[in-house]
Length: 302
Image (cartoon, rainbow, N blue to C red; front, side, top):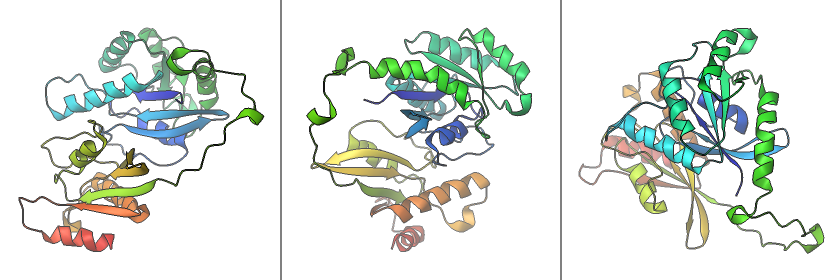
């Protein structure tokens, strides 16, 4: 399994911007509005010759119960459980907050290595806030600017030994077999590329619930609230031996009802998912009559 790094932190510290920087593409929606990310998103990342998987997470809130914020927190907890190491991001310009400290205390109870990153340090503007990060007890905070790509060399230095330790282990923590050379490698048959399948429809018709049912786990955030999904999130699913790339998307409303910038971004993300899909599943609510918006989405797919 590849080395997996989870990016965590309170809302609006730049986690998704850093995720996009590491994967080299604008996969995650980025906006100044706090709490844009809700589901956890996985991507293949790299810094120089280091290759690893990275998970973007929702902003961590001290929330309990069954509400949306509590379910978002559960998604972040699952991401940390899947990861080999955690990248804790703080906003150096805002300085340390009680929520940063709460999150750090929670991470300290786990058994994952934690790398502390002070984001938004471009031009030395966040020096004071970065120094406050020492109070969290995770060592020297790495000064970083995810937006401008500054400080990635220091992040490389922090990740390299962790990835090297992971690479030196085989399954179940056993040392990897180093006795197999290139001449001894078994040539594997090439598998067909994954079928790209997008799940689309109006808000709150059950798209994320359908994806969870297909893959057999609570991977996507679901609930009674409309418009929970914002990013188009892709997950791999194997059906009858064939690899399928399922893409869960945000619900599409009538264009006249889309008024704020964030919804425009989520709509554009869904439209890209439709454009690049090889097959599209259109979901509608059987309790409602077929609505005009269902037909509009179908026409867009066609």
